[in-house]
Length: 206
Length: 212
Ligand SMILES: [Zn+2]
Image (cartoon, rainbow over all chains, first blue to last red):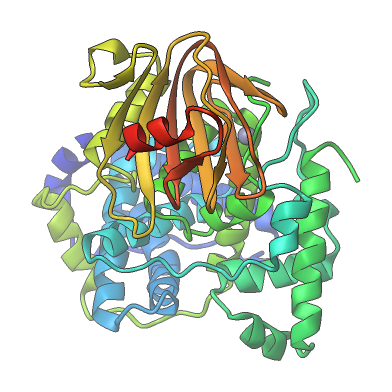
């Protein structure tokens, strides 16, 4: 939007800003990305934009490839993702968390848009078993006034790991089993436990 | 907390990880607009997506990718929406939920004096979608669902044996659930079924005919 105007001063060889060396420190790293986004939003700063691009674009391309798209499609959707990052940098709410999460949601929505436009079926994750839907209910009822606090950290690491592999890394249950060196049965068991635990957590504590 | 009935955790996970589409996507998205609770849950799941993105290896980009990108931004070409659900009626439904505009003015097909509907076109195979309007006090005859029924309350409220459902509530019923909802105030719902409703009460055959 407003960002487009300022591009007249664009130089093809904007230098990439230096990233903090303490990559381990997630908070410092995230603050760095937030600062980049703010500069993009407020001053249409291209060096900051290119810094974000250099870090995230190759990963986003991988993300699309993992969704089963071709290299060409992945490159195109990566570009569209960054057009949105540029245009909507203003909409990022720094208090809401990680820049990587925000960029992830943009890429995810690009994927969904693209699937819809090209009449592709979205690849759903196999539900663990029918009895969860019946047992826990496909809806959960809450008592009044309970606030959700961060519940993912309360999940056992081994369950979280499986959820991440199956839902976000697009691995089949079997591939997740191979990647984690556990049996297929264990994968299904952990997902079932994770879903049960999450249901309980969302209803207000285990 | 404004909502009492929510999608299951597995549905929210599917949603956060980009595996819901069409009507399911729309219903969960709209529920999250009204329900802070589920909105937060989805956001937290999305952070797993962000973490996963960070952990991915790099795929080499085409030569000059950044320059090409800046050119496209500069030329202001192909504006695409961030939002992934923009069918015409999605917009309409969102307005009803947002209490904008007059839902009465829609092109309702009145089936009885107190019951109207608008069938919605859907690209989702095997799904049947409609907006339904119950006037206060309207009792829907006891019915079962051959498969699955998802309901999102857009305005007003209705109740059945298992509770009351208000604006934003996400209700899921399977073929095991037989229920006879009553509108406790003028009520508009988005109803999605995998099979047409099957009425089992006295008025069953007539209403089945009306509905199909
Ligand atoms: Zn909810």
